[in-house]
Length: 234
Image (cartoon, rainbow, N blue to C red; front, side, top):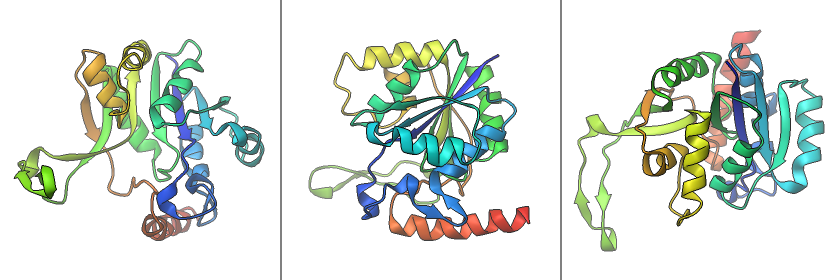
């Protein structure tokens, strides 16, 4: 069975307030993007990796990551689109005869081999799943003027992460249908399968450390996690 990881590294990261794209920022001993590439490289379940980045960063990613860190599972480095969903679709089109795809944000550096394995076990049973963790906070649904409309039962609210894992033909066909409609509301891949794939999505246990580096505050927290990871390996 062939499992392909699609790692998304085409985001501009405007909320980071930095001239350097967030996935290329230094985090502990390595750049942010290195950590997720390394996790999928080391996972015995992963056959190959498709890295999606900006068109002008393709050669940089090949030199600064694939060659420098010997990430030899990378089979393709392709240009993404303006929006995340466009980048995902380009990644899907670059897959070759694969059975399952694991779509992961390159700005989530703390994915682990154990988390990848849990996700694949879930995907093999249900064909569509996403990492997630129960919300620690009460969530409010708001309407016009930020007026609270309702308060969902927190026991039913999870924060969704990546990897999101799908049977390849299921997610590819769902994306092809989605791109024929208004795609601006797409915020994650599970949503595409839910709305256009006519298939339910299951959640599997992620990790509260599996954060996305989006703001300077995330980078500060990430430094602590990176230091802990480095200390464990010494």
